[in-house]
Amino acid sequence: MNKKSAGRLPVLESKRKKDMANKLKASFRNAIFKGKKRRWNPRLSLYYCIRAP
Image (tube, one colour):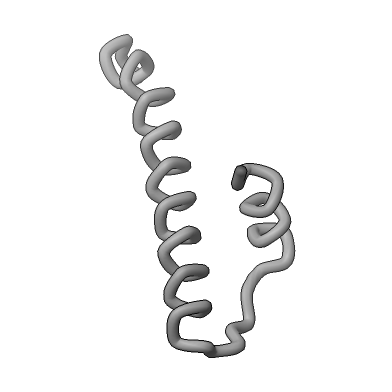
């Protein structure tokens, strides 16, 4: 592994986490908006509940 990719990796990781959080928020919004009961990962929903203001 070269130094360039090693330096960029953490940024990519944080971006991926942000994207996941955004997708999660969107899916929650959609579920609420459509009034659908969705099956989701309890760990993810817990993570979202903790992170959400």
